[in-house]
Length: 308
Ligand code: OGA
Ligand code: NI
View (tube, rainbow, N blue to C red):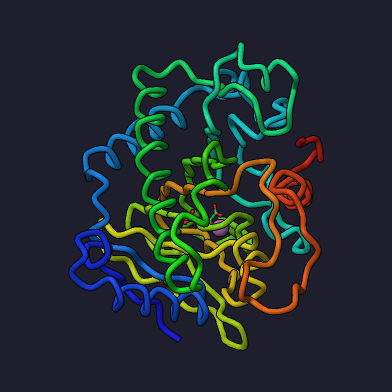
């Protein structure tokens, strides 16, 4: 099992659309993990997200605690070290800390006022330029991840334009992550888990630790290709594709030196109905809304269980 590097420009420029789709389809069925190079997201924007994340994590605890995710009903804000266990069966809390940004809506949006699930305002730390950088990046990576679904459409023989209506105002989450150095190798950076959404686009700073466990196989290291995204299929797309695509467990070992990453989880619109895609055979799962599905997955991860 290997994790291939797929050159997005083959698809985006039209130079080798069929070849790209074929490679993407194979990776999505085999390991559900691949790297995407030449994706067009500016390097400077990525650098800026890392820098703003660093500035946030360096704030005093009391400052970060003002925007604690545990007090937020919409999965936004700061998750402190030791507050999550991505592997809920391990009895071990993750060492990472994180900051979540959700789909940005103004405070007077009717859905925000009505308290609809996942329709909240973002919370922001007092770090100059943080909000602007995060929202710029969120838009860029949302665009790329939805564009990737055009290639999934082709691979799955779906009509062009099948997916975009499901991602117009999605429950996408941008998450900056910080893993403290663990020279003794104790604990776990992020416990073994699968991601919940459709796809995840992950950028790391190059410090190792990310591993994947393909079905029937052992843990393997995810290679680092500077500038490329690590992309993986999430549980929602696996379910949607009626298990044609696979969502694969992965984890982050405690890194010897401090490690940072930027994850972008694309989940569908809250009211999107996730039912077996046309042409994928008899449905293995009942239809579920995007919001109900994501809530059920988040509930298992957080302590206390207060996410709606
Ligand atoms: C995650 C995840 C990997 C990383 O947050 O779901 O798998 O490298 N992160 O931070
Ligand atoms: Ni993950």
